[in-house]
Image (cartoon, rainbow, N blue to C red; front, side):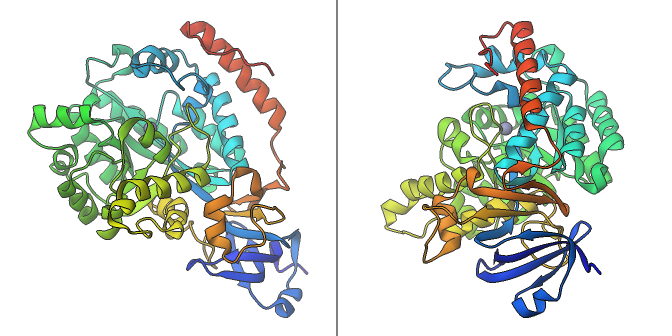
Length: 453
Ligand SMILES: [Zn+2]
């Protein structure tokens, strides 16, 4: 008789303290890790409906992309090496010409790319037609905190993308009613503020109030640009995080993407308030500058990592870990001769438990422990860049990439086995996304490349 729904046998397992348990059996019942057995003899007596051979593989928590944009999947290739203002010239025509079916097609491709890169959960900062993103997540099996980003101010925002406060709130509530806890609880709906230059104080206040009443999260781009700092100083006499604090919105339910242009005082403020900081090193190094990650860490802030979507980046959190480590070393480590200014395993924690906490799911995902949700990826260790090694977890940070992810389980469901998606037609999803890209490019009059599929 089967004791469990699924067992991964003989696998190396990354434990919460980053030690590795050899030849473990991971037993999954429904959506949760029911048992982790380290004794092979005892494990031999355990049975499941489905068995997965984990030999020569590492089981680790699914990666969490804590800041991304599913709706920008079809922008891939359109923003790299483009001159400013990308926002006005490319992003606005693109976003305003997206129909729900285009977002849906892009979001399905986005979910496929994520799964194949070992990203099992993501926090989406929002874009148009987020119901289509929520629907794609429900169907593809991933986990997500989805936001409808809202804007009601700013000369640089076209009228069609702005909405009055009451409407911004009620549209988010509609999405909340339709999709919060959908997909057996895999989808959460959050409130969103795109950024402070496109929000009136009334909108910030309403988002703070309603998100607290519904006990859900708020996702914002914060301290991303110097323009935003100038805007807050000029209009409110305060820096961005200081101004936000006057609304009582700096709480552990706030996910502050980027958080690059913070003063030391603001770093202390967001750390004290328990705000979740999410760095996107690839984006930050290209546009925003260096984050103050060592100071945030020293003050105990929770930090996650994000890809910022596929427009100019690969959905690759392994790359983000390495970039953050190198960037922090170059910026802060070298001048004080501190080789440990950004330890590898801290970046690994950010890409897993840090992101989970940022999604308000730290008790459910982010580590492999009995009782937690079964969001697990397996890394194929039969690779010259990964094995042999004297320290496997550090080598994962230093050398692993999306192509090394062989299997993915989300909410107890085996979604990818030996890099084959079990429930999704990858070729068809790419084809549909290509059709949508062609359509949007024509409608928006954008020099988007015509895909050759
Ligand atoms: Zn973003």
